[in-house]
Structures are given as structure tokens and as C-alpha cells.
Image 1 (cartoon, rainbow, N blue to C red):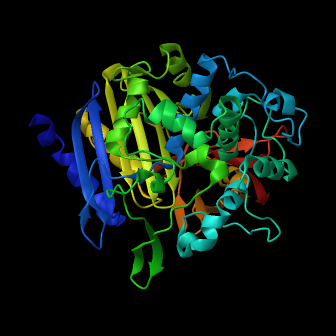
Image 2 (image 1 turned 45 degrees about the vertical axis):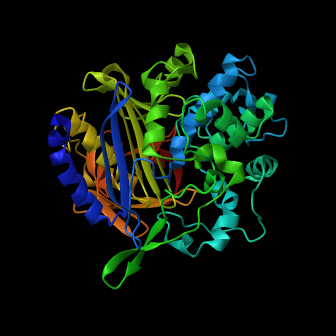
Image 3 (image 1 turned 90 degrees about the vertical axis):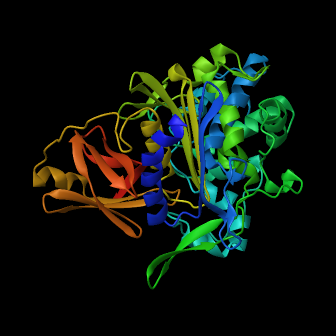
Length: 473
């Protein structure tokens, strides 16, 4: 088979990354015009029992869930139950933000992460019950938050709204002006879906998306799979005397108030069915899940989230992708690293799922797409030009930047360059523009942008698509 032969170089490169990061299992598939053209299961869904990964192995998909949430919102708009430009206060009388812009924040702003809400610690308390029963929680990368002992679990949308309303923060800007990835916004979209549909989020998604798309092994909770056995085990990484070791960590994190932000489970086969919505103008098989107009709205570049990369509705877009448009979304959560891609103009879709967090799933799938289309595994869409700073100019970036979501970043000048450090990891960056740097972190490309205030001073960083403040110089 010609495709299988041409993918050999991909498989060799992918296996090197899988070995390097000790990823127990990886499922990957590519479809052309709605038919699977390449698929591969690397490693195991359960290492101890040497249970192989298949295209029907159930994994978590994490934040790829956000596109499902937006499909649901667009369906409800089509049925006349809401409008994406409705102000969110229409649905939540008790929605509070410390800003005069509260009444201007719309559903559209939630869908595009442009409401101006900075990262908050909500996710920790929304997962608190799972965290309390999961010994592996301290090994999750980037999760370092000093918990408020008086704050109990956030289990309901009412508790979520109350918690957000109590937080002291400044909006990043007027709604629609600043992009900052917001799990809180998507959690509240789930609440809107429930309010206007009269159904629980998970029931709405099952009835209106999963079933009509033929996603027979997809769900919000693995307990809903009725004895289905091809479900991955979960893994985490911890420090050991020999470096790092991967171990089985069986607790699935659950967050009823955050379902809409990242808690669906699925398979490669099911997700390639789902990707048809964006490849085939809303149609999966004989079922029209969205109108072409709604799909167009979802893959419209509404706001820039990185140089040359934009956010639509629950999807990221690269309009200049080798003559087409790359539609994508990834996800990371405990024991999950995932990515879905679609290139509508060329009829291509792809999905990768893994059972370990913080690993380069994006690099693996984009490498597969590169080789599939005749490019080198590590080909990049854009070439970045060097940008030169003096040591004095570099000192402006120095400081500690902390997100309430658990992320922290320290920046120091070293040998006429910036050195970045996150908990447990130090990396060098390359200047690629004014206040703009690039880095390769765990074999994944990352762009880091600094934000200046009206006085020209750097007071925020945009890192991992989130904006958070400088707290120490």
C-alpha cells in the first residue's frame, strides 16, 4: 500500500518521541474525504497486560471538548433558542465581574476566549473531589496552587458563578480585544446550553452530536460505556532516581461544573466521524448536524491568539497552511494529550490520542500530516526572523509571572539572552519580533508574547495561550 510505505518515516520519528517521553500508548488516524487512509496504534492501552492500542480505544480528549460545546451553541442558535451575540447576563442575572464591561460580555466572547477574564483557580476547586482521591495529582505538570482551605468543591454552575463573582481580578481589556484561554468561559457555556435546552450538558451532547455522528464509544463518563472493555488505563510521570518514571494512575478526573471545558472521552474512529462536521459543511454520513453557515462561523478567524494563528468557535485556525486552512484543537489533562486537525480544502482530517499528559501529541500528529502530504516530519509553516535586543532591553522582560490557574514563569537574562523557567524545567528562547519569543518545550513549539501597559512597561505575559501578570520584577 503506497500510503503505508510513505508513512514509514513518520513512524520512525514518532517512535523516537514516544520512547523519549515514555508514552505508554498512542492512537492516531488520518482520513481523506471521510474515509480512513492511515491508522496506527503505538504501544499499549494497558502496559501491565500488554493490551494494544486500537482505533476504538477510549481516551480522554480534554479541551477538544470545547468544539463540541460550540457545536451545541450553534445548534441552539439555529433553532432560535439563543444568539451568539446575546449578553451573558441575559442567562445569568448573578454573573459578576469587577468591571464596567460586564453587560458587554457576550456568548461570542466566551466562545472566542475574548471576554477579558484572566486565568482563575476555578478548575482546581471544580476538580477538588477527584484531586482529593487521586495520589497522582501532585505529579500533574504545572498544577501548583496554594488552595484556600475554606473553599469547598465547586460542583454546580451556581457555585461556579458564585466563586467567579468573589474573585478579585482586573479584566484584561474590553470584551473582544484580548485573547486569553478561559476554561471558566467554557464552563459557563455549558450552563447556558443546559438553561436554554432544558437538558443536562452530557445528555444534550449525546442526543444531538454523539448519536447522529455515529460516535458509539464516546461519552462524558466511562461509566456510561456499559461494560465496553477497550478503555485506556491512565498514566502519570514522577521523578525517580534514574530520572523520570511513568506509572499507572487510575483515577479519572471528574468535574460536573467544568464538563463543557474538557471532559469528553472518545476514540480515534469516533473523532474522525466528528471531524466530518468541519470537513463536510456540517454533515456526518446522512445527518446534517450543522448548517454550512454555522460551520463557516465556527472556522472564521475571530481573534488572533498567536502570530498567524486565530481562534474561531472552539477551534484554532491557521489560514495560511500550505495553501489551505488548518483547523485544529488540542487538549491536555490528567493522562491525556490530544489533537484534532482538519484541512477542509484538501479533505483531510486527523486525530491523535495518548494516555499520558504533557507529551508532544501535537508534534506527532502534525508530523504525520506533514509526511502524509509529502513534507518533512518537522516542517514548519512559517519562518521566523531573528530580532535583536540589547542586554538593557532584555532586562525589561525579567520577573516572575504567575497565573491563578496554577502556571508560573520566571524570566532572567543570561548570556545576552532570556532564560525562562517553569516548575521543574528551564528553557532558552529565540527572539522573533517585538516582545515576541519562540521556544521548543518538550518537543513542541511555543510562542511567548509580552504585553505592555499604557506607560510602555511590561506587565503581563501571554504564555500557553493564557495572559497572566508580572508579580515580581
